[in-house]
Image (cartoon, rainbow, N blue to C red; front, side, top):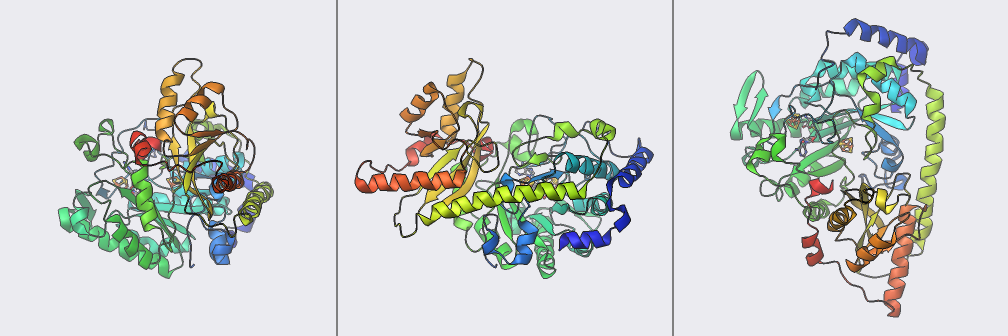
Amino acid sequence: MQTEQHQSGADGAENHAGANVDEIMQKVAEHKGCGTSGGSGKASCGSGAGENDLPTEIWEKVKNHPCYSEEAHHHYARMHVAVAPACNIQCNYCNRKYDCANESRPGVVSEKLTPEQAAKKVLAVASTIPQMTVLGIAGPGDPLANPEKTFKTFELVAKYAPDIKLCVSTNGLTLPDHVERLSKYNIDHVTITINMVDPEVGAKIYPWVYYNKKRYHGVEAAKILTDRQLQGLEMLTERGILSKINSVMIPGINDEHLVEVNKAVKSRGAFLHNIMPLISAPEHGTVFGLTGQRGPTAQELKALQDNCEGEMNMMRHCRQCRADAVGLLGEDRSAEFTTDKVMEMEVSYDLEARKAYQEAVEKERQAVVDAKKAELAGLAGEHSDIKMLIAVATKGSGKVNEHFGHAKEFQVYELSTSGAKFVGHRRVDLYCQGGYGEEDSLATIIRAINDCHAVFVAKIGGCPKNDLKAAGIDPVDQYAGEFIEQSAIAYFKDYLDKVKSGEIQHVERGDAQIRQGALTAAEAA
Ligand SMILES: C[S@@+](CC[C@H](N)C(=O)[O-])C[C@H]1O[C@@H](n2cnc3c(N)ncnc32)[C@H](O)[C@@H]1O
Ligand code: SF4
Ligand code: SF4
């Protein structure tokens, strides 16, 4: 539906590539030197929901959106374009002046773009990565505090790349003023960051907001912000625009309060709640970084997410991306698409070729779903209170296909008689260090996955295998190349059978391991 709307909004004759790219190139040339570029600078719903859990209309909107569907994130990519530098509020965790090309976290970008440069970049990425289905504008400041650049970018992309879904991420202060325009441009996915619904809590997070040409401080500022956020959310819901709520979990400030936030956004029709860990380090120069405010541990984050999960599922696969991220979630290909490189690229936007590629991706994804369902059938009728976490080394496509020594992160699944549920990821130091420092990196890997019962890998050497066993983590390489969830369920069934027959005794990975493994969630992310 969205695609149809986009297509009808575009001039049919212009939907084909060459001429459009030339036209955009022309505009880019006209803008050279005058832009901001070149700086250094259900119903039951949620990300875990599948086709059968959602109304068709909603499924169509989320099925190939890597952020709105956990299943889709193994197969589809997204990109952000950094066209929105300014912001109209200040959060105590944000400092957009701190720029590090090697760092992946929100608000960080290497280059700011004009809308025309951004459109050319989108066409270049979409032609190179045909499974890139979503363009988001998420900063580095607030997209709706930069409305002209934001909407111009959407207008160009909707015109020349009509199959790409458009997304925006905002603090919500000016959202009520822009909902009509968002609807007009067929922006079907809007993220609002809502960290509080109580202005007393808000005053600890936001030093000021700039509203109607005036700067407000403290509780007064937070009251304006929460009222505008909730009003904007209600307006989106009335228009059938899917909303995702981002909340930053800040221990001691809003961690307990986020349960109330969850209820408030759920009752106003939010589709998905994404509770993310605070990222905070002194070198970022943020208020929280400088005052030593810590982020939550992975276990604290999971406990809060579990607590909030009900009719509205929680997003647990967010990677807290840079404002210029490109690629599958968790991979960053932005360095391949710097402005210099993009401007030199011959871009041919071939809608039909993208469609054909995505049809093949859909088949691959369906195979994953079918395999999971078939395996799950074997758990029907099983009753057990046993739950366990496993860590998985994967390069994507929903498979156990990464060598232990090459894994930069592990995806964590919770296994129970209900099946295998994705609950997060843990970033780690590479084990393989070319013969130097393997022992140190193994110690940090064990800390990061210490609450997991097993680690699934495509391959693993004898030394790390023995050390993992000694730490009580089962190294499993028998599912190399197989689908993750299918393999996880098979492993769990086998485990239950062995417990039932008395061959093994179930041991909970309890608080002791968790305490030893208490990396902060941001370290693990
Ligand atoms: C960079 S912001 C850009 C969009 C918009 N200005 C906003 O705040 O929603 C994207 C997301 O990153 C989050 N974020 C920014 N800095 C963060 C930090 N230090 N720790 C955790 N999340 C952070 C924001 O709260 C927001 O949800
Ligand atoms: S609203 Fe977004 S861009 Fe603005 S200060 Fe907060 S996190 Fe940074
Ligand atoms: S920051 Fe989270 S929601 Fe935004 S693109 Fe990355 S994974 Fe998706």
